[in-house]
Amino acid sequence: MGPATLSIGEFARATHLSVKTLRYYHDAGLLVPVEIDPHSGYRRYGVEQIATAQVIRRLRDLGMPVHDVRAVLRAADPTVRGDLIARHLRRLEDELGRTQKAVASLRDLLEHPVGDFPVHHRHLPAAGVAAISETIATADASAWLQGALGELYATATAQGADEPGPAGGVYSGELFEGDGGLAVVYLPATLRPVGRIRCFDRPDVDLAVVTHRGPENGIDRAYGALAAYVARHTLGVDGPIHEFYPINRHHTADPTRWRTEIGWPVFATHPA
Image (tube, rainbow, N blue to C red):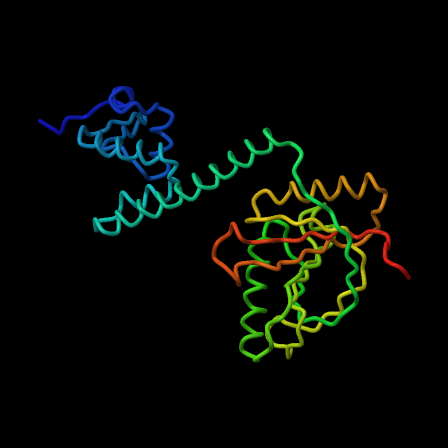
């Protein structure tokens, strides 16, 4: 008497995986039937495969990608298998953290639709600065900024430069309006060119400025308040957006203490 098997329909009922899903898992190499009729193509599954199907179902319920599920099933070493599952659970925790932040931000926006963002005007004189300049994808802007700032601060330390003033950035309109554009991040310091760092002539500009406190999450509210102010006062002129980072990761690991100042180019309001 051969091993006990189930038709694909019976196996679907036993595992709560649809026939369509079982066929997909077969094609993906996750759950291959023990028998396939060469003429009809009918699939039969061994009863010992029920436990495997249950494991697959739970991993997929946790959102694990098919290729990772396959790696878990093929891992002979329990330690390797555990590491694969733990890595996915960490991803879930990260996603949960982002979701919780988004929910908190949404709740705050609904309860306080008008934020308190005082606007002040600032004249930024032309100056030579040490900068990293690159055309980047908008989706990569945050990671690129942190990498560029880290390189600038590390180089300033290595070259024995005095503690520079606040770091800043100059961002083209294409970064906001499309999929990418020119970004410049700088320190107001004189550094020897090395790596990606070059001298950059920061232009003379007048700005309307607001301050965003905390991590990047929610910075769009400060941008919105600033844009509304500029539009109401008919002050806007063409030009890139400026940002300043007086308190950032370089100064503290506590994101609640970070501060970003956003500058929108406006007509000159200072005496000629």
